[in-house]
Structures are given as C-alpha cells and as structure tokens.
Image (cartoon, rainbow, N blue to C red):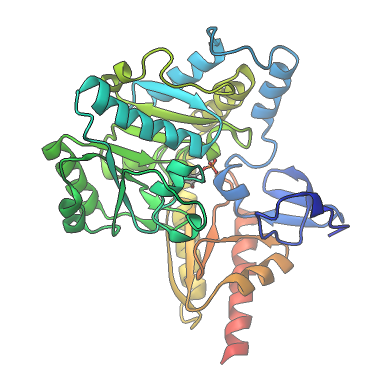
Length: 397
Ligand SMILES: *Cc1c(COP(=O)(O)O)cnc(C)c1O
C-alpha cells in the first residue's frame, strides 16, 4: 500500500493494509497497480461484479438527469423499483431507505406500530432475535443483534428485545409471552459465521407466529438479491415472511436499502409516521432498477445456485483430509470454510496471493464472490485458497 493517511478518520475499522483504486467484474487493482481477484464483493454488495455495465449506464444517464427531489413528491423510479420488488417477492409494499440498519429500524418500528396503532395492543412490543445474529449498528439494531461485542459501551440500550439460540424452537416458545410482537431472523447468519437455518426450525417458527399472532421478520440484507441461489433466501424454506429487509446487493454498491411487507401492515405506516430524506432517490432507485433487471433478465439467480453448488463441491473435494478444515458449508454463493483455528492469519496469506476473502466469526473464511464470476476465475481462487490451506497444514504438522 502507498502512504497511510487514515489519521483523520475515527479508528472504527481494523483495515487490511490494502487500498483499491479500480474495479471491473471480479478484478480489483490496488494503488500499486497489483491485480486482485475479489471473492468477497465488499461483503456481499457488488453481486454483479465491479462497475457492471448496465447499472453504470443507467446511473450515468440518471446523473445527467436528476439526483434528488424529496419524498414530498412522487418519484417514478422509486415506484418502478417498488413494483419490481413486489412483483418478484411475497411483499405488497416497500419503504426505501439507504442502509441495512435503516431498513431493519423500519421493520422494528413497523412491527411495534402495527401492534400499537392497528391492533390496539401497545403492551406487545417485544421482538425475539437470535444468538449470533447481526442486524446493524444503530441503537435499536445493535440491540436486536445477538452478539455482545457490538453493544459494549453503548448503554442504555432500547428495551424490547430478547434472544434465543438459533435453531432452538423450544427456547423460542418459552420466550413468547404477553409482550411479544415479532420474531426477527436471518435465513443464513452471515456475520455470525455463515450458518444456514434448519428447515424444521423455520417451519416451527411459522407455526408459532400463526398460533400467537406474531409477525415474522426476515433480515435478507446479506442473503437477498440472488446471493443464496434464490432471489430471496426465504424462498428456500417455502415461507412468506410478513416483513423482510434488503440493502447490500440491492444497488450493486450504490447505497440503497428497503423494508418490504404485507398489505395488512400498510395502515400502520400512515403519512408522517416514518421517513428518510435519502430514501429511494431517483439516483439510488435507478441503481436498484438496473440491478434487479439485470438479475432477472440474465438468469443470475439460477447461475448463483449452480455456481454455489460447484464451489462447495470443489472446495470439499480439494480440502478433504486437510486437518485445518472442519467443514465447508453455505447456501448458494454465501460460503464458509470453517477452520479448526483462528482464520485471520490464513486470510492474510490468501490476500498475499492476491485473492480477497473475509472472515465471518473467528474461525471461518467467508466467500461471497460475484454471482457472475467467470468459472476460470473461480477455479483460480479456489486453487489459491486450497494451496494456502495445504501449505499451512503441512507447516503445522
Ligand atoms: C450488513 C448487514 C446489516 C447492516 O447493514 P448496514 O448497511 O451496514 O447498515 C444488517 N443485517 C445483516 C444480515 C447484514 O449482513
């Protein structure tokens, strides 16, 4: 890396000593002109690769036309993206915002307000979330997150969240009480270590929601937009959440988030009850339209499903017998190699071979390559990862 000029920034990130200045498809170039293969996509954001042409063209056209007006006016691009999302999901309504945390805030607010204003049950405000979940960094969403490390030093935290172990239906049932209004869950815990949820557990949650009149909120911020081999990960489980949230892949890297919900919830979000200045601007929704149209028109979801299976089987075959590897798992193209030790050194060694991967919890190497990565590029990345792990294993024995 060139000169480190980060002294003016709050030190909130433990940054890798790399600075990228250009990207195209699955390739990135650093400030020294070195080429890298990107197999993490800025944490499942640039799902169509860097600077995908259709999204770039649409953004350039919109840049020369109109960036921002206000949600005090109709925004045709926002209405079109809303239509595309509701036509292709179980939701009937969309609220646009700019980030994942903001989308989850909207989900939490909508659930509470539905009970308070529509059902007239203000005592029901509690949301059940899960150990090792991740829902964002605002006060409410970090409280919803089932990991203590994101909460340290931020007390007092908002009330109204309780936590159950993932995949433990009995524990969830025990937590349901007079105050419960919703259950909030990721279909694959991304930050928590790439843990796909079990089908029987999801079925049980749906049954509990029906029995107790609870809303099911699915956080699809990392899993949505084709990442898991379905447009939305809840489709793998044959369920329809009342609310789900999107951000990361929705704008191919242009900031945009969305909270989507069923028609019955619409009357809870009356005019003036919630809002966001930058939510669904003409520019952000242009990126969203071009992204979802590309995904739908070019068979990206099907390809992600097939490529995901190929990656897992290829990794499993090549890593079989490696004593450092505990398990290879994933859903679609959200994949983890679980190691028997802390993975940070291994990740640095993979970076040194100019392949970008990222952790997910201490022992996992997480892969989230572009959904349209070339097979040859993927094979090269797999080769690099497996040879780093093989060398390390040989050195350890
Ligand atoms: C990244 C992420 C968030 C937070 O999104 P931000 O855009 O960083 O606010 C929330 N939930 C999940 C599952 C995520 O992966």
